[in-house]
Length: 148
Image 1: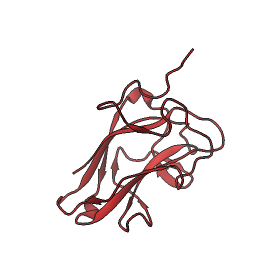
Image 2: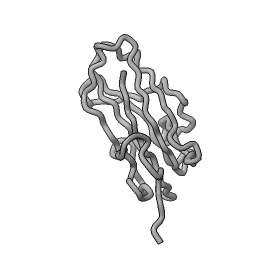
Image 3: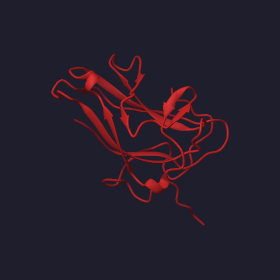
């Protein structure tokens, strides 16, 4: 009998990104190696830049499995955590703040990130995911990514 993993549909349209579409994520994934990175985004035209996106999340949570958002101002050579996010990161996973836990009942949550500290710059945004060595869940799905 086939089982459904993850949200039944994308938030908008027919596509989204995920830790793994239609299957649980794997064990032992790292923030550095399990990423989705944007191309360069020029924030020079926005006086108060921000990011909004939708996230469906169902992870082991606690200190074990989670996802966060990072930003680079040097073409992707280095990334820093985006701290001004709503809702705030509820977890610390492998020493980094993260969203996680069994939140599938919240469906597609609206997430906002304040990027005003990066106004006038060219940035790259990156989602990083981390899982420990045991216990997997449907994971993280992201859709409707919009920078203004």
